[in-house]
Structure formats: C-alpha cells, structure tokens
Image (cartoon, rainbow, N blue to C red; front, side, top):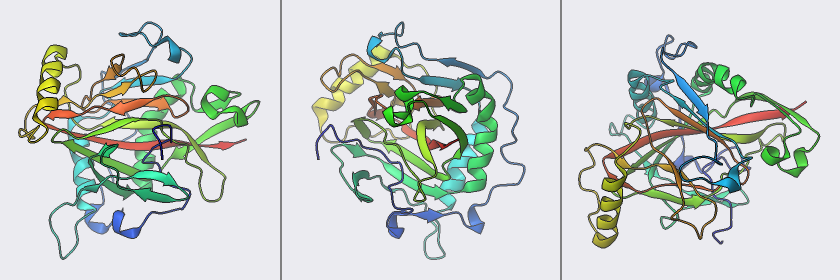
Length: 303
C-alpha cells in the first residue's frame, strides 16, 4: 500500500464492515420527529471555491468542484447530531459513548488501522431517516450548484461517465462522525467512489458537516502552535476543551507541495461539499480543542 492508494472512510464494496466497528440506530438514539426541518435557518451564505483565484491559488484544480455552505445548520442541531451519534454507541452494559479508532480502506472490502495516515475517533451511525432530513436541508444548495444532475461530467465521474447522465438519489445513510483531538489528523488522500453492492448507485461527492468551530483562524498562531507540536512529539494537545485551533480541511495540488494548501476551517453548522475524483485533501492536525465533523456521500444513479 502506497501514498498513491485512494484512502477513504467511504463504505467498502461489502455492505457492512466488521460488526464490532458498527453502531446501528436504536430506540435510545432516535431524534425528535420535528428535528431538522427542511427549511434552512436565516442568514445562510454559500459559494463555490474558485481554485484559480483562491489564497493560495491552486490552478491545478480550476476545473474541479468544491463549495462551502455556511450556517446551514444551527448550533443546537449540531449538538443534537453529536448526541444522537454518541447515544447510538450506548448499551445496557456501557453508558459511556464509544469513539472507536477510524480505519482506512485497503481494498477487497477490508479495512485496517493505520494511525500514521489516519488518527482520530469515529462513530459509524446508520440512520436513513436522518440522512434524508440532512439532504432535504441541503438539496436547494445542491440544485443551485447544479450537482443534483450530472450530464457528461467526466471530471467528476471519471471517463466511464463520459456522455452519461446521473441523477442524485440520496445521501449515504452511513453517517460517519469523526472526533479529532490531541494532535490527531487525516493525512493527504483522495476520497474513493462508493458503489452499492447491487451496483445501482455510486457516490461522486463528499459532504463534510462541521459540528463545531469558529471558522477562520489566526494563521500566525496556528503556524506557531504547529511548530511547537512538531517539537513536542508527546503531549501535543492537552487543552482538548479549549477553543479549536487547526483541523482545517486542506486542498493541496500534490503530496510534494505540502506548503501550498487551501484551508477550509471548521465552522459550526457549515458544510463543505467536493468532488471525490482527483481532489487531493487532508484533515489537518488539531493542535488545540476538539474537532467534531460528520461525513457522508452524495449518491447517484445513471439514467
């Protein structure tokens, strides 16, 4: 396995991973029926990332798609999503939420723990109704970005999708909640397409919902704390309850150019959506505080 392998927490070709790494929705983790109405809160702002003019510019990605939808979920909704995910791990024998170590796909439906590449906690929460509610909230923005229907978009679908049309069907109900603290990270990788076992649906976009964070960060402070963390090698982030610093989703043109990164900082209730094909990115180290995010996929079916 090399750095060029695609790494993702998308589901494998098998319908489910090892049961010990999976938590299903249970009665104790059901949301209020009125939770997550379709209407977004007031004040939502959204934009497509223009990689040609971004800071820094990444002209290599000028034809690739990524977009940010700010404040599309409320603080209370984000808190409830975390609560639901944690509640799904509870059992009569254990009343403490369990964040298992996130793994990477290594092919043939298998996963492996590789903390040199990916180091964070994860809850896998299968919740079709919740995924539908999240999609209903986001669909107007997907339509605005014209990603609800893909017509002859080989840069998104790969060459196998040339001259074909795909229609958005749903969000993947396998919601992956991620928790980063203590210098944890996800090194540079590409997200892999996920194809359902019946081969009828394939994912082409990733959705990241940031469940906490204040958005833009002090870059000088971040660089200073990262340098300190690199020297420490041990207790790099003791203040896990502090204000979040680090944890950006960073796009970079190639592995060899780690210094040229476009960072999207976590902001409570905001969503980052981007194509999975050939868009290299990473989850930067969290140097202070704790980062919570939820990841899923936009699924499509060929017409």
